[in-house]
Length: 465
Ligand SMILES: NC(=O)c1ccc[n+]([C@@H]2O[C@H](COP(=O)([O-])OP(=O)(O)OC[C@H]3O[C@@H](n4cnc5c(N)ncnc54)[C@H](O)[C@@H]3O)[C@@H](O)[C@H]2O)c1
Image 1 (spheres, helix red, strand yellow):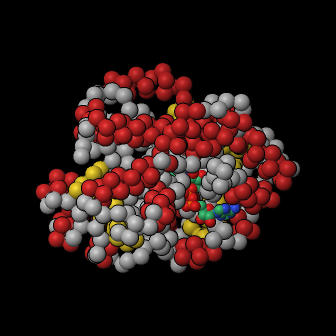
Image 2: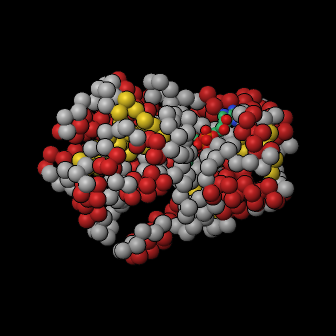
Image 3: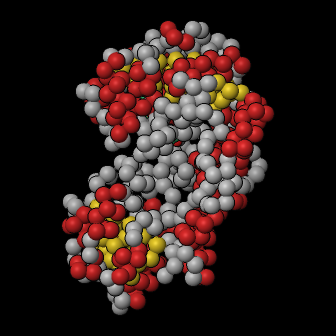
């Protein structure tokens, strides 16, 4: 299969699929983007981006200008493609078990069009074993072709960091695994063709690049491999595990610093100063910072997929479970801090109006999935607080129309998401003149000293009282 003459189908045009489809088009591939949501497709057909992210908007504009990109909700439009990139959600259900329905749906969409020599790549994050045990059998059954023999099945987990102006779909290093040697070669060549980087083998990284990385590590945070590079893994399961485990490492580390924040509270220490101090040690990973909770479709979800796979295979990973419980418990911790500070000023939570800033799961993105906002809001409402809610990136939960309006008639402010507009505004506002007496900074983003100068009680997560 010659890569350059291929036509690409991208299934699922969200935070992962849209920039990927646009990048492929920019690099010269004819691309059909397929999404189940008619509204998303209608916008894309007009060249409008449904995701608020400068890097994605720029890529889409370049794709439209290339005339290589089309969006559709009609699956028959992908019938003449040869490379199928699956980018559908992989959420958990109400019991935190992996919900495979979107992935299976995408396989059912692709299978009827599969022909000999085609390449199918799962980009969605999945637990180790998903491609071999679920995706391959489904595609094989519905296409009557064999993965690794008649068509190629690979996994190349996306690692894009929405809202990050530096690490984008265009340069983030990738790992790739497949069910056959030909498959991994083919997939690696395809990704190198859109990312523009070199191809490595995981064994080369251990033997040559890693020592180089260690030599230069002192004082510098650099990636182990160059921008845009593609690393071939030994197997498709290895590639699946890289993504599931790297996000779990992050989740566990955040849980651990949340624990350090609680220790700092009882020992009267400032955890942020201490983390910044620890970060001056020139080796080891991090820093990680505590906060009101962990959200998003990756860090809050992927550990559950890994845990489910491990549990099914006979080992219950208790540390992952504890990390999830710790991070899921942070909204309650934040609420109890708010309650304590309001008590100090003689106000009950019940009946007191609070300004809550932030619905998105992280700064300057428009994605609210798994955001700690929801747990925090529900707990505050259950305790009888009255809420003004504002987020300029995710507006659907807003009860007011602006930052100023959100602050009106409130006794306390809670920061859930440190969007730039909110931090900039609050750092300049005299909160005490508005009658505000308490600020709970769930992201340790505000200038606490300045707030306290005005006789307002300020607490961050794990910051000295
Ligand atoms: N969002 C991130 O930051 C990020 C980063 C790295 C990896 N991932 C992973 O990438 C995958 C996709 O995540 P996302 O954030 O892009 O999700 P998303 O919800 O933003 O986009 C997924 C799109 O797929 C569409 N879709 C669902 N089922 C479909 C089907 N059967 N056919 C066609 N379209 C379908 C949905 O309508 C939606 O527009 C997930 O596995 C996620 O864990 C996400």
